[in-house]
Image (cartoon, rainbow, N blue to C red):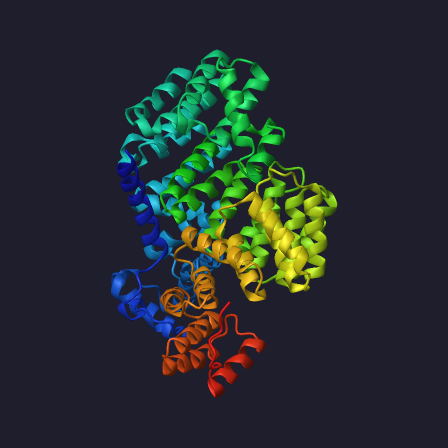
Length: 590
């Protein structure tokens, strides 16, 4: 079933991609590190347009400028801007099929389903069997409660084989909306032919029966879900918790409680979701049921790597249930995956403090601020959240990280100390908190505190290669506890054999022990893995000099001077001295 599912949803993804993006011409497909100029991009897009579309699809001269601007926006996945430009082009060239086909998809991807509706209607006039415009119009009438009209958008001649699990679910909710229990359950039956669809079948069977007031039958469906590993997701357990609190009808309560408690501490998001009220996990209207279908299928599609298709379905889900904060969270993550951080944060802004997943959304929002280099905005937002929730350590830790990245280690340490005050010993991330504190202690020249924090981090996560390497290399630099340092960096290298900075530490440890041949062997691997690091290249130069490869040593030192990563003023001065004078005649051994 997995291969079949990949193939089926691959068809939809291909259709969506074909409508939203052009294939780039050969000149843009070459691998190059040189950025193309706007003129080259425009020329290539014009070439792609005329080569890939029939003459009848070419926008008129009046529409062509807006078309080009829209196409460039599509390339950067700025769906809202692309849709607006295409709408302008359509005003000037209203019958163009290429513009119509792209416009409705772009409006949905950009979160404006209402504006997509007239274009989707136009598509169905010429291509009545197209799946995606049918889904758009089905969503419209479902939102309006016009369930008899909805049926025509899911009728048999319009149902594609690639929608094997989407269409039965939508039809089932459509029948439930008309209080036809027998027909609703019958629509779900085709899903039983695929073992992989059983959890989804049982979930929506239970939800539909619960909506129709059939409590005992709904309980049977949910109890059956608990027996299936794939049916034990956080989302499913939240739905079952709501059901159990309202009805007390679950038979397999012991297993439910065990699973619920085991998943609760899996992540910050799961803790927040599972600690809150679950009043929103009950489907109160058929439209919410349809929204949940789109949400569930979007999640499955996203796991298969079809991000744009998942975003299309997630936006339909939000259209039908705009107050769902968990759908906003998921949709925001999809936008992040497409590098649309501004749009993701705009969506996160609509999540309020009283909403289900507010705190987790704040974490995502601040990650996006940092990604965009907006450290002041991140700090300001985190300070506001901390004022509301002063005893949640992850926000103090995140604010500390923001200060640290901004070179404000004293302020960072204040936040790390507050985080440690509220954190529990078994909290996920406590090791990272100690490590971040250690980095800042190093920056403010407080080595004893840094060492103490690093040892605590390693005590929490003894196999963490990053922590082992950092402390081991710190010892090497200071000439302290060299045997312990060697053991630490050796262990780190075993855990992360393809991490250039860690192999550099191990190579340098061999160098300090006087084993220069071994140092060369390992440092060469480190340079291969992390060629742009000045310090690693400098270390390799030192090792070359010690084994008599002096020309290569000088070349390596000179090359290190051209690199930016870890090229401090101190290292730069040392490199110039080595190039001028070489290393001392007496080998340096420890």
